[in-house]
Amino acid sequence: MALTAVSPAAADHHVTDGTSVELIARHSGKCADVVSVSTADGAEVSQYTCNSGLNQLWRIRDLGNGYVQLAARHSDRCLDVNAASTANGAKVIQWPCSTGANQQWRIENAGTGHTRLIARHSGKCLEVPGASTANGARLQQWDCGTGTEQQWQLNTVSNPAIPGLFADPNIVRFGDTYYLYATTDGFAGWSGTEFRAFSSKDLVHWTDHGVILDVAADISWADNSAWAPGIAEKDGRYYFYFSAGLAGGDTRKHLGVAVADSPTGPFRDALGRPLVSAGAYAGQMIDPAVFTDTDGRSYLYWGQGSSHQVPLNADMVSFSASQVRTYKPTNYNEGSFVVKRGSTYYLMWSEGDTRSEDYRVGYATGTSPTGPWGPRVGLILQKDLSQGIKGTGHHSVVQVPGTDQWYIAYHRFAIPNGDGTHRETMIDHLYFNADGSIRPVVPTIEGVDPI
Image 1 (cartoon, rainbow, N blue to C red):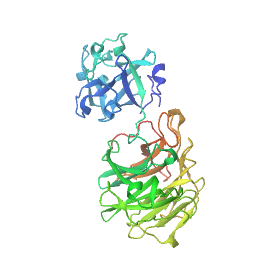
Image 2 (image 1 turned 90 degrees about the vertical axis):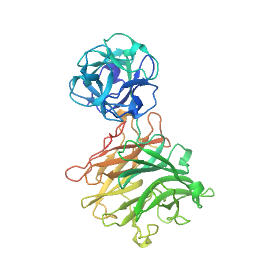
Image 3 (image 1 turned 180 degrees about the horizontal axis):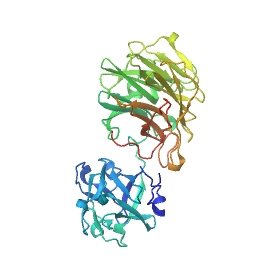
């Protein structure tokens, strides 16, 4: 829903309900910032050098009455005039969001691409006192005027789940913690060699655990193209599946498996050779994913051009070739991924080329982890050019235990100037319809709130 209060200047920033923005003071170029990243009620809001911190991101909430709330992404608390004061100089703080008019702001066109933010309860403007340009200057309300210290640029922000260039994300939950593993992007020909691990309790605040496997340093048979990992746990050990390029300049890709006693590694080669060698099956041996069924049996999926699927043996590092099943669903290219909901299994895959803005995700359903799979049901995820979102694909899905709450991790072209080797990882909601079909995902610029 578009903001009812959006002025032409704000509209130029594509400000809509749910968008995250930086509030940048025109006179100083600094951002509205919750001091010290505090999550406390009453924490003051100042201006500070923009740094992409979650305490400088404000999610727009359209109230449908000509006003909006601005909720800090790190705390989910609202921009608030302290104690609903109507006095000049009343400080601006964060406070739990409510129906108070002192948390409602009207966006007014100030010209030249800037806006004024006017508090509903007082009719006064959000201001940097004394037109200060110093970091830490506390924000206040004051009678509206023409000063640039009351003018704000609403800068729509792309807020990937993890900062930097990462693609092909595999998201999983071990214990009470979510983990994310991905291809390290930004290399010509996708030639990077390192995998990193990230962890989070709430899907928003992620800890970078650094490099957990470097195929050039840690894998004797590979030295390039560390792509598209998958991971599974069994009996307290963690099995990390990946694709990589053979050492010595061989351009073919192979699947490997590494093992560790922690989900953040360090991982070591489990076999000293590929788990699946190039040429063993049709297409490229890339994009491994693992699904563990409710009976504890794990299944491995991989392949470009065809989806190869097989139960893993109890050791998690071998399988019976006679049990491999191969499918080529309509429009299948790569990135197989399987989840189960109730008694239904969902096979998902990426369609098109990751270098194309039309890269997308389709799916089919079946009655077992290795099919047979029904016809393609439709698309789960695709680009949204109205938001500048392109190349959405190579995803994974995670369920919040004990709930029917699901999230999808995927990559897209980095915003604003990304392409097929400059991609960023996003997390958004995934919903099922009453009939068990998957509702098309609405990709967002800024991702999800903390769970």
